[in-house]
Length: 110
Image (cartoon, rainbow, N blue to C red; front, top):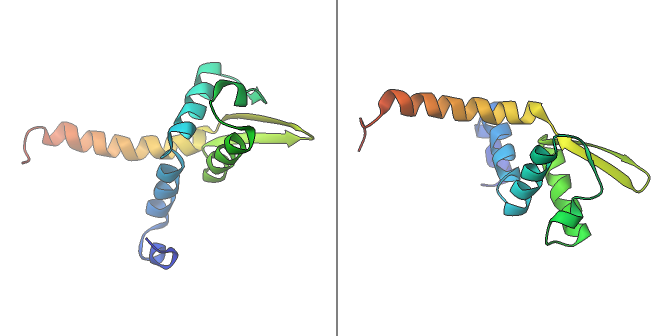
């Protein structure tokens, strides 16, 4: 989808697409799972748990942060990251809508 086509969709649809794209890579899923498991802000050791180079991990963190799925502070050479609940609430709302539909329509479709 070209950049100019996003204007034909609602702000909410465009925002959900950005969030979905951000979690559409296995490395980003692994980062999110790690942050959830640690249940606190993580400073610098994400690279140690992934089979990726530091610049690659940094790029994935940047994508997650730009999408609003993680929060982070950079002070000097140290960066700390944690889950941004607001971004995941938006995803949760969308999947709850889908889940409600599935619950109501069980076995009533092809």
